[in-house]
Length: 163
Image (cartoon, rainbow, N blue to C red):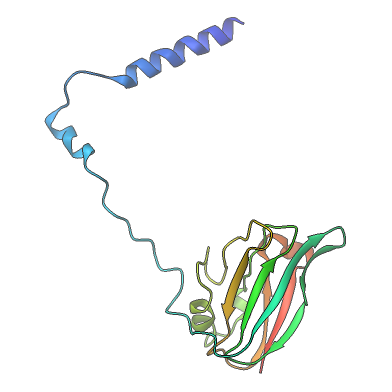
């Protein structure tokens, strides 16, 4: 009980000390102005290409049978898009390992993935029915592996084949 009383007294003294009062020094007036704007670095390397073909839906699922994309493999045409929907078990995201994406594809794919948390990593979808749309316009034919970062260790991987 003595410790709690001591902690309360110290907290009250700290609060009083910070409360200050009195007159402001002339150089403290600068603190009243808003801080300068900070521009965050761009999350992508350019403007994403619009979807010119079909938009496909891929569900992101986490349940008693595991974490997965449904389907876990999809074939699309260049210009199509994929709408990734958090169905259950979130948070989920859509990401690609930069080491597994060809150097000539990475800038386009990055530009086609808006609101990235980090390079080639879309935002976390926290709520059921939240969706993340990725354009595959301008992506050369090939098979690309995407994953859900929070559930990668549990095998949440999708193979996207672009024709």
